[in-house]
Image (cartoon, rainbow, N blue to C red; front, side):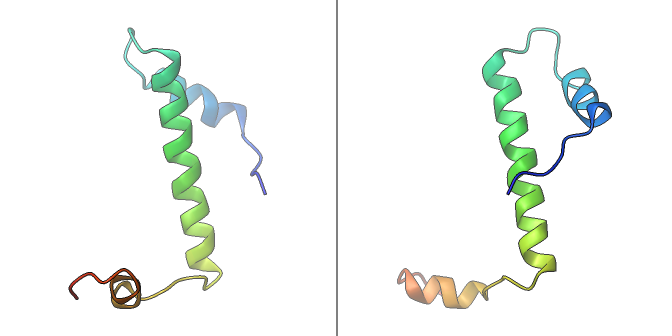
Length: 62
């Protein structure tokens, strides 16, 4: 589910990019912002797993 984008937030995101930013730079910033927001939503909803559980699943040291 996508969240509603406020124009002010979009303008702020574009304004903080350097003057020589590319479309790829902008898309990367949008992707990072969306990933963080989704992660926070999952965390707030209790959809989390312990890091040791994930490490064990992939055979990584705890």
